[in-house]
Amino acid sequence: MKYRWIVKEVEKSIVENLKQNLNLGAVFCTILASRGVSDAKDAENFLQPKWQHLHNPYLFYEMKEAISRIKRAVQNQEKIFLYGDYDVDGVTSTSLLYQCLKLLKANVEYYIPDRLKEGYGMHISSIQYLHQKNANLIITVDCGISSCKEVEEANRLGIDVVVTDHHEVDEQIPKAFAIVNPKDPRGTYPFKGIAGVGVAFKVAWALCQEFSEDAQKVAPQLREFLLDSMALVALGTISDVAPLVDENRIMARYGLLALETTKSVGLKSLKSIANINQLKTITSEHVGFRLGPRINAMGRLENSFESVELLTTNSVEKAENLAKKMELQNQKRKTLQEKMYRQAKQHIERNHLAHKKVLTLAEESWHPGVVGIVANRLLEEYYRPVLMIALNNGEGRGSARSIPGFHLFQALQGGCRHLMAYGGHEMAAGFKIKKEEIPNLDNYLNQRAQEILTQEQMQPALTIDSEITLQDIDWDFINLVEKMTPFGEGNSEPLLLCKNLEIVKNPAPERYGTKGEHLSFRVRSGEKIFRAIFFGEGQMFDSLMSSTHCDLVFKAKRNTWNDTEYIQLTIKDMHLFSK
Image 1 (cartoon, rainbow, N blue to C red):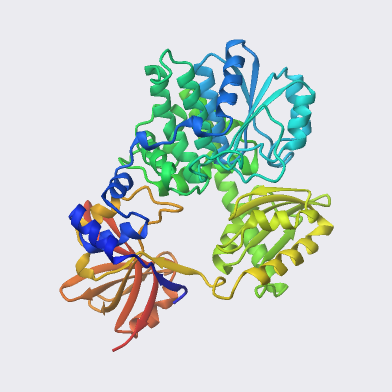
Image 2: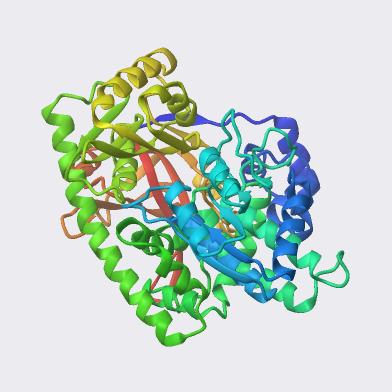
């Protein structure tokens, strides 16, 4: 067993209530209860999310002021610049608001900072550049909440700034014309987990209302735009690993449907290059592992300006060429990532760092656009907070990833005396640091982790939705589980536990994959037999063959082979034993 197994505890009375009111089985009702569903109304909202459950855009603090200023700029043909970010959330946010403002006949352009030359967020030099471009209004998307000096510079130059962001708010906030952020402590927006593109969508929604004759009913053309733009919202929300609960779940659900039928030539080209253009159903996995990484690759290795071009162009030829370039960059990113991962592993082993509660790694040769992916991979392997820093000319650009129990933003906030700049969330953050301060930051974070993280928290855990029997698994159950989509952060695919399963030896278990890295075998309980696969655990083959029984933690999934559908158990962890 690689993990601690924790079966969620749910109130039996809630499960019984759901069974009676929904006429569904105990196992599925237990899973619903483990997701916070307590009655029939909750279940309906969860399984059938509806548009009308989205929160009103004007619940954002200062949304009214933001819309008033943007409307004035549109009507007076003032020069508007969208100031975005280079990740998928930033690119989709920029693309969505750009298309909205163009539809409203605004005089609008966009600016995406260069990851390598500028780094994340607003910069004094960028503000001065936009001033030279005659900017009257800057609207930030997916950034800006920590840019106090930069907003001050814009004000000095006579440029108004509307900040739209979703990142954590520091003690000091920018003196912007308006701030639209769900985490604004001055406001009471009901959902704090909305992504940057979700905030951008709410701004677009409010603008479409404002520019419609009936403010309570969006004009047909603008309504069609909002529905189509949900594809971008899903793309940005899922790629940013925002929790797929509350309104994120609603927007992701409708957004995935919009992705399937999109008219956008850019999204069509992106789907084609990612080999998902023929699929009838697009899932959050397709977004997270196929589409998102390709857009991110541009921002990691070049400038994301062309990513916005791809998502906003009406030219099929241009879209196809940009998608091909994106694919080349993604392949380059993979090669670079693998090299950096090997170097990081060698660094950990050579310096005997695996015992530390926080891993802080820095190299001159590392690419700042790829450190975040490698940090995430190392976190999965070592299960502890990881900071990866790319050094250049005595300064480092870092990306950090964390585990539950160690709030990264708060940790960096506590160690800010060692940093040039920082920002982010509980589980992921970015920062700039002087080379000589890296040991000091490492010492501070490890000391903090020593005080905060227990040994139990340092061991990865699988949170199991329900213990079941193989007899509970049938097509009705699979169909119900699929109604819980989209799966992702905050709404993971149900993890199930089956104990005391017989390992079928005829047909025999087998290793498969180019290096025999995966396992495939069958398990039996009574008359029920299912195929089970265990990715990346081929080394357990001998132990599997010498055992008679197993306990499995797995996901029950629909699979297709030669046009035949069957139920497959995808294993997350396994306990082998013999009777």
